[in-house]
Length: 224
Image (cartoon, rainbow, N blue to C red; front, top):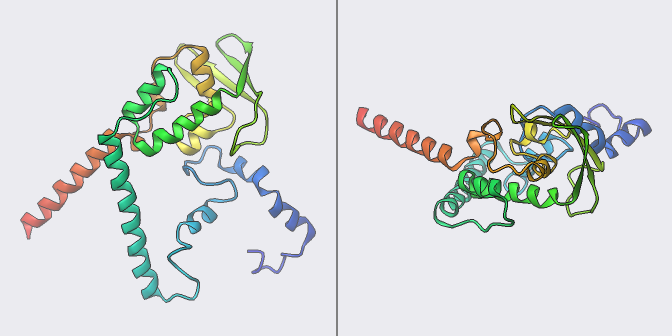
């Protein structure tokens, strides 16, 4: 876009580009685009193809390389399926909701959930309004910070088991953020509430989809 409109050297535009990680996430807080970086969804998506496709490639080459990319993705998913079904996940702590996560999530998603659990220990909790509003402050630095800010507010409805963190991670990625998980520890939660379990991240969902796909293939073959 900068090249197209010849504005790459514009001081204000250049400054906006350099600081995009501070304001771009605000536009995607409630948009489900899981595990993409804050710069933009397109950059994250394009990065998946950088080892397969070049700008000078023809359409035929692109299609051929895209098929190789698909095979690579399928291989990764099959490996994750094997690990999810055959291997017992290693627990990081002693929280009951961690064991619940290990039971329901695929291996890859459980690993991401585990990272959030570990990061949760870096935060302290301040009660603003009992059972309704809490402030989470980061007391320790940790690797690969997703947010630069130190303080987050979480709105809570204990009766409805509803948590709303201003970081917006659940809406964006489909897994709970470290701030909410810190409150789970505070409230001694035993399980992840049903509303915060995204079906597509579960082992059960994947197996159901594979069975449906198998039935569809067998049905199509029988018709032939």
